[in-house]
Image 1 (cartoon, rainbow, N blue to C red):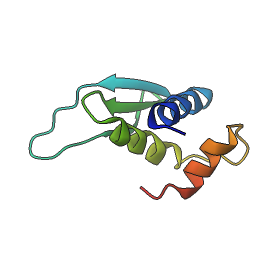
Image 2 (spheres, helix red, strand yellow):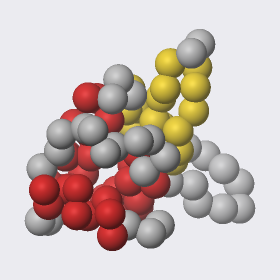
Image 3 (cartoon, helix red, strand yellow):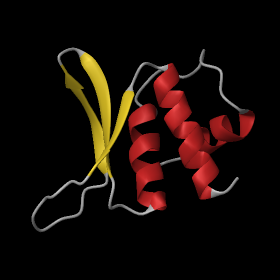
Image 4 (cartoon, rainbow, N blue to C red):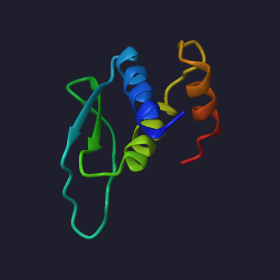
Length: 88
C-alpha cells in the first residue's frame, strides 16, 4: 500500500469514529509538530500539519487513532496490519 492510500484510509477510519480531521498550518517555534488529537467542546478533532510530509501526516493520524479501541471497527485488512505494526 502506498503512502497516499494509507493516508486516505486513515482519514476514512477517523471519520468512521466521528473524529473530525483538519489540515492546518501549525506554527511552533523551534520544533516541528506533525499534529495530534484534541477535544473541542466535547468533539474529537485531529489536527494535522498541512505543511508536513505525507509520512509525517500518516504518523500523526496513526498515532492518534491507535489510542482508540479499534478491535470492533471494520477496516481493510492491510490497514489493520499497518496499525498493528505501527509503533510511532
